Image (cartoon, rainbow, N blue to C red; front, side, top):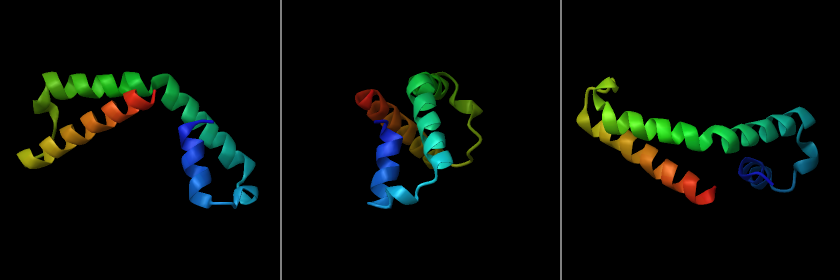
Length: 82
């Protein structure tokens, strides 16, 4: 089962019958796209952060650093799961 589907199913806790089939298809599609393109997107973000930080439009250095740290942690966690 895909990670997103597991999260959704845990969120609704036992109300799986109430889930709409269209919503389930949407979750499945989203999970497939994340599996297919997620690592590439995270690598692109990491490259952008590493080589061209001036393109970020944040005024405060702290905000930019927090965004960089978040993207790096997300990429590490996603790569570990994949």
